[in-house]
Image (cartoon, rainbow, N blue to C red; front, side, top):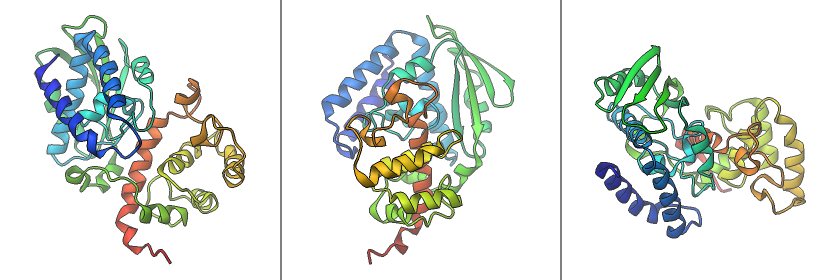
Length: 294
């Protein structure tokens, strides 16, 4: 195990004991960490990939570039959360590691999303590597060969500039903020102008009618606001208002919405929409002082 990575993980695990906000035990966290470390230790290429992603995130933040809180399948890894690559704790959200391991294989494309300037930083980080050979085949797409790998020998790393992230410069210092009561009230009232992914007229109608009560509700609405899923809203609303739904899939009112619930790739990737919802919360949070409980 790389000493630098082990030190980072141990330090982050200590912080996680006191900062997680869902009912997760330290035994659960440690079991998840053991599962992911076993996967990591099985192949030097996997270690190289995790360290590379960690370095990319750290160098971008030091250059005052905002890194996405979570994108595609990356939020499904607890290691990436602990090392600061994502800000979504998959243990709190019950995101299985299996989706990550199925996505990270030889020849896989690994997404990485950050604000303006991220590609320039990526060029610096990826040049002159000792354990990897890197070729940029097109702007932002890097083919990486891990020279000491056993199974994960080649991946494609796609660096995407997402200018919307430039709206959140304070997160570089403070991190992505959790949902608070006052911000949630702004969502439930549909006063979401300027809140990315939640500012359309249709979404505002949904928010007002659905009256979301948690971050989980917001993630759910974000996930179904998508072609082919919007027709689910009336039934979800009915079930929420009546309480008429089974305990299975209780976070989505008895309807399987996420890939992680049913193992169906045609469903929504939950981790992706958690990250997107975190961005909306961050966008709306500065207005929370306008909330009045009356």
